Length: 273
Image (cartoon, rainbow, N blue to C red; front, top):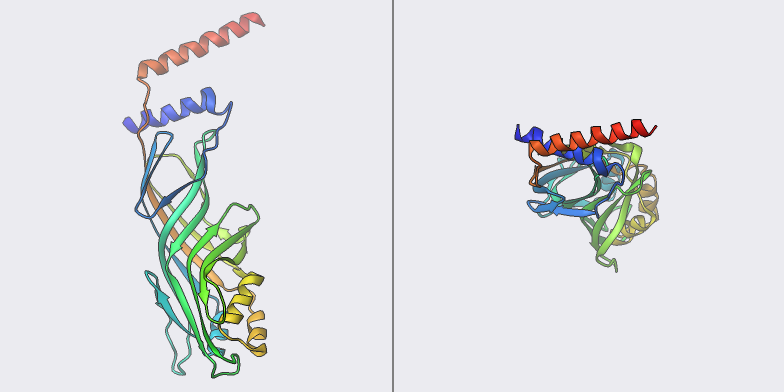
C-alpha cells in the first residue's frame, strides 16, 4: 500500500505540474557502493561488472606480435593458450566504478549518460618477432563509456606506455549507438534496478592507434596488421543499484481535495464556454 501511495504521488505531480514544465536535473554520478540523493529519491549500493572480450582478429594480431597480457587490479584476465603457446581468446573482467545520468521529471525517467569501470590490462611486446622492432608496453585501464551522443558512443581509457607515451585519458574506441543493446533509461520506481548491456563493433580512434603502435614498438608490418583490424571486441556489462523514494507523500485527503479542485475548475470552464 505504501508503495502504491508513493507511485500515486509521482503520478499526481506529473499530471498537475511536471508535464507542464519539465525539469531536467543536472548530470549526477554515483560511485560503486556509494549513495546519491535527489528530488526525494535515494540511490544506493551501486554495483556492476563489465567484460571486454577481444575480437578474434585482435587476438591473432597479438599472437603475431608475440605480445603478452597481464591484469591491472582489480581486473582479471582470462587468456587461455593452445598447444602452440598462442592465445585462443582474451577477455578482461572489470568491476563497476561509477554511473552517471539525469532525471527528467516530466516522465520520471532516469537517462544514463556514462558508465565507468575499474582496472584493465597491460600489453607487453619483446621485439623478437616480425611485427615489432623493439619491446614496449601499454597499460589500458578505467574504461569510461560516454553515451551522450545519440548516434556514436565513445569509450575512453586511461593509458600509459613506453617510448614517450604519456599517462592520461584518451578516446580509445568508438561504436555506433545502434550496436548498443539493453536499456540506458530507467523508470523512477522503488526497488533494485538492473541493466544488462552489450556493445559490439568497437573501432579504434586514430589517436589510440598511434599510441598502441608507438608504445608497443610496432614496425611497418605490425602497423599494417593492426590497421586491418575492423573491430576490437565486445563489452558485456551488468549494472545494478537500489532506489528508494523518501520524499513527502501527501495524505489521502489531499488527493481527494486535489480531485475536487480539478472537477470545480472543469465545471467553471464548461459554464464559461
